[in-house]
Amino acid sequence: MKITLAGLQAQHQALRKELLEAVAGVLDKGVFILGEQVASFEREVAEYCGTRRAVGVASGADALALSMRAIGIGPGNEVITAAFTFMASASTIAQTGATPVFADIEEETFNISPAQIEAKLTPRTKALIPVHLFGQMADMDAIMRIAEQHSLAVIEDAAQAMGAEWRGQRAGSIGTAGCLSFYPTKNLPACGDAGMVVTQDDAVADRVRLLRACADASITGGKRYHYDVLGYNSRLDELQAALLRVKLRHLESWHRRRNEIAALYRELLDGCDLQLSAEHGNGRHVYNQFTIRTPRRDHVQAYLAEREIGTTIYYPCPLHLQKAFAYLSYREGDYPVAERVSGEVLSLPIYAELKDEQVEVVAKAVREALAS
Image 1 (cartoon, rainbow, N blue to C red):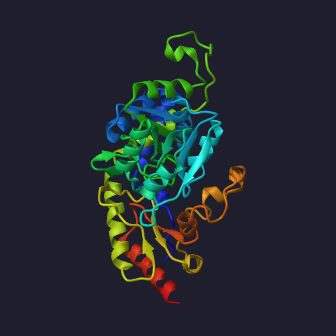
Image 2: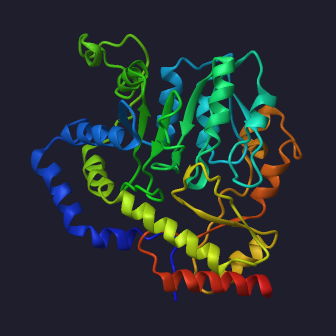
Image 3: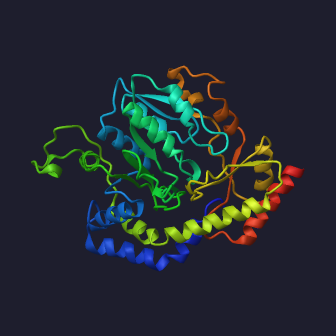
């Protein structure tokens, strides 16, 4: 039985009529950039996330970059983020001219360790970027306490965690700004790149709104084609917004199904010689990934591949050991938890259209691989 890692074909088949109608509506209207679909989607996402504002941008990475620009991060500043995450969480820091500073992660949740954040603070620290990895929020109580004590901005990297919760508050609604990604592997997937900045701060939202459209002065009431600052070309387009509005209506049911699948995996893999990420118990996990951890990771992945079961590794090399960050002079051993985890994690298929019998096939193959 062939089982893919992601299930976009099944999702699109189920929503085909709605999606095609949404596309046709945009084509018929003939407005493709920053029109009614984007404005409506921004309002709907802000309501969903529990924030005052939401601003659509071209990608999750751009959401991070524009958020940092909006709060004034630049040369001379340091920004702390996790050593174990996707490249954009740190590359966008460097691209502002600031210095990425890495913190190790928690063994149990794979999320950034608040104690490690505190150990990395310096007088140059201006912001924290906690990453809500794999669909579960980082310890926002501790992180916000650190930020308040040291007057730091907090930019939540919620690219994998839209709809996740911490004590009743949704990802992106707690910090200075939250950054969402609608990349096709995310729980709310676009048909291409797309992203969003959510925030309670009108000034941050207004600044991102200006910067995303090349900082044209007309956006703030000035003359068109006049520019007071340098901006970006990072606009969420009407087609993606229209498609995402259709999918947003189904997101909560998809989250519920992902949690059912995760619970079934946990039941079927109970007693195996592997480690699963712990649920912290302070909110809701939305399982963008279901990730197991075993020192025999490569063997398990190869065994599943032979049986046409899709898996992937998020992430095989921690950021402090990436060649792109060699100028920071980190060495192997600097972040031992991130280094161990990167050599042992493997993500299994999880998406709302996955059937229980398919989950059973995957779990059975994992058990067989570990026993062989």
